[in-house]
Amino acid sequence: MIRGFENDSFIAMIFEKMRSNHDLCGKYELTGNTIEWEFNDEFIISIARDYIGISKKLFGKIENPLTHWHPDDDDLYDDICRLGTRGNITVIHKTILYDGVIYSGPETECRIKRKWLFGKYYYLRAKS
Image (cartoon, rainbow, N blue to C red; front, top):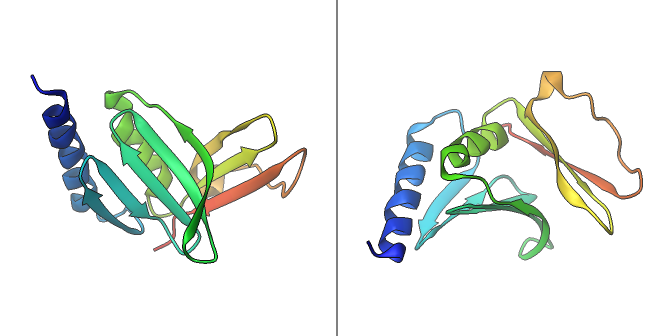
């Protein structure tokens, strides 16, 4: 089996699932082996096989990487839905030594309200 072909078909399948899910927010497009998801005016999410990366837009064009992780194939679409389903929120905590998602799910259940504590908190709200 050709590894590149396997990636294309897997990511294409994930992309089609995203397109059929009307509760996902933002705009996304398939470019080769990657899904580029313009989550909102502030954040861009890159999705590839075994990879999700979140970047903050600076000045509308430059991307400042905030965090990334490597989900298993079985978890990739679930992570996408947690990030982008309307009414959900994802909280990223970024410090000099650490960056990562500390909450992703329904906004009504999120108890993290800090703006700064030994680093910065970023809130990705899935609205429209």
